[in-house]
Image 1 (cartoon, rainbow, N blue to C red):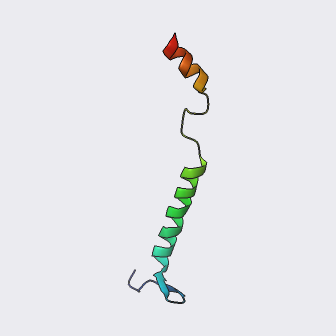
Image 2 (tube, rainbow, N blue to C red):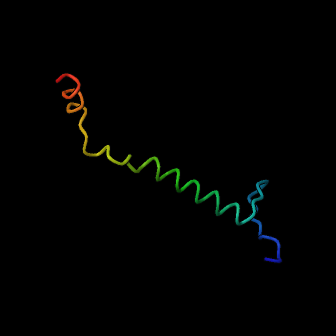
Image 3 (cartoon, one colour):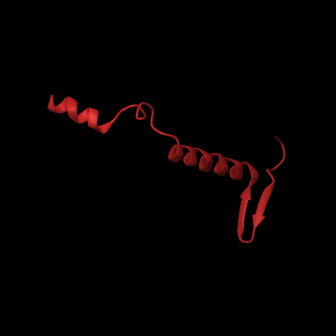
Length: 55
């Protein structure tokens, strides 16, 4: 805790290692949000919703 964070150098891009880990976690959560379905949307059918409105 008393030492500066290590840095990663990619050409002109310089990031501290904790920031790089945080960016990786945020990108992972974003990818999961795109892939995982919304809760409760799996069992519903659009036709069943229309029947309820008409009936």
